[in-house]
Image (cartoon, rainbow, N blue to C red; front, side):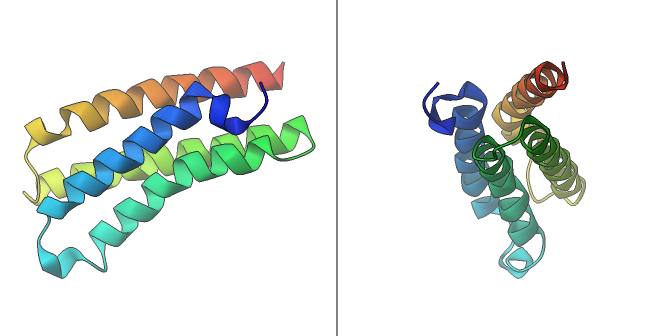
Length: 117
């Protein structure tokens, strides 16, 4: 592997960011500086921390950044649930995002576990 760009989990995380950005276009304009902003930041944090961790010299650092990435993923999932509860989006609109986020979650878990060994 030559780069973090070769990591499938990073590639899927980039796809997730794209889906989230498209999804928040449905939100009310008055959420621009609150939930929309939070969702964008938490989703961007996922691939960003994967990349930053990959660039670290030590395995423990890399594992820590992957854990931060996983935390951002959970944060994003929570914010999406709040958006559904507030009826900013329909639950059916989340199917692709939820499926992809669960896949990324599993991939991060495996990668973190491998680095711990």
